[in-house]
Amino acid sequence: MKKRIIVSLLAGMALLPSMAQVSTTLSPYSQYGLGILSDQSLGFNRGMGGVAYGLRSGKYVNMQNPASYSAIDSLTMLIDAGVTGQIANYKEGGVSMNKKTGNFDYAVAGFRLLPHVGVALGVVPYSNIGYSYSHKGTINTTEEGTTTSMLSYNGSGGFSQFFVGAGWQLTRNLSLGVNVSYFWGNYSKTITMNLSESDYNSETRSYETSVSSYKLDFGAQWQQPVSKTDLLTIGATFGLGHKLGADAELNTLNSSTSNTSVTSSTMTAANALSIPFTFGLGASVLHKHSLTLALDYNLQKWSLLDYPVFSNLNGKGSYKLQGDYFKDRHRIAAGVDWMPNPMGRKFYQLVHYRMGVSYATPYYKIGTQDGPGELSVSAGFGIPLYNSWNNRSTLNISAQWVRTTGCDLIKENMFRINIGLTFNERWFAKWKVD
Image 1 (cartoon, helix red, strand yellow):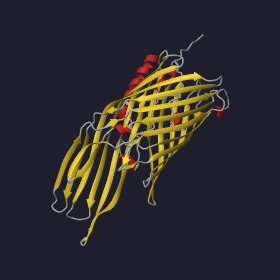
Image 2 (cartoon, helix red, strand yellow; image 1 turned 90 degrees about the vertical axis):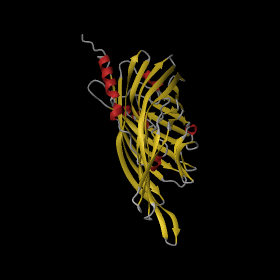
Image 3 (cartoon, one colour; image 1 turned 30 degrees about the vertical axis):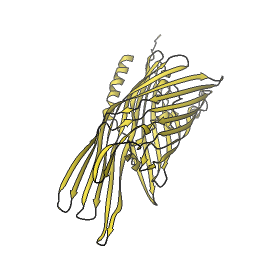
């Protein structure tokens, strides 16, 4: 029965890449680079500010540090899925706009494969792209009149990863792990310029690419009691940066309203997209199996990567890789999880109460200016679910406020609600009948 369940689960999860929906965004900042990066937190830690590297438990799948998979016991099957709803406010120069989105977020599963070896698999978003806005400007002013331009910007897409990982408890204190991911996605970004003068051209530039590659992430955790009531866990992760083997294509369409002519051209930047080397370090302290305090730091070395950029110097257009487009991204997060009484019998004593905060610097530039930073504050609950034979599953509900802003840039305020359901069941128990 155990083998049948595992095979069925693997077959079902293998179909998820074709069905997974990349989380949507309406932020104009998603037009830069690979889009708005996902923090990849799940239901159990989203209310904790996304901390993960030093968290270790057999009650949830912590895909951000694969070394944690070895904590899953031999009787447990974990399945976790979540959805997110968002209300966003965008403000610039006294003009304000509200938008709503909602979407499938993630699906993961984990179980014990061998003694001291746990495995996990699932689908999670990597980045999101989605925007639509326009800008009106002045080209020149003469005695005959003023020539104005209307620029329209539209984009959609994003990137996801389907991962399979394993964690091995090498010694009593040390665990190691690895995630191997299929990394895929695409984007389509369009800029259309229309001029007011009838004898001028209208131009549309379409940027497109499609990615099918891999991603490798490694993790380690060291767990050590520091007192009779406190357990310290230190975690570290690193991900290999590499080129994605995807060509970026720019299609340009020019049309003239004076002679109704249409011309088109295509330029390609070969092997243009990359993902960065990443490093994460975190620690957590578990006090009396009731209170968890955690702190994380993450570094992504985007500054080492090039990005395809269109330029039109002296009227000669080119589309090629350019440096100094990205900058290193730093993220720090802190979170707390409190369950009043792990051995209690009353409902409120078994609820997890969570809070967290994080701040991330931008990884891209807007012209010569750094992009906006991101501040996030979150809170949530882990509510135990009761059934007739097992009471280990949890409904995770969290609220998150995110503020994205920079000097003289659009200000974004987002309020998100995440609902995640963690099935934690004893699927592999052997029943005895006397």
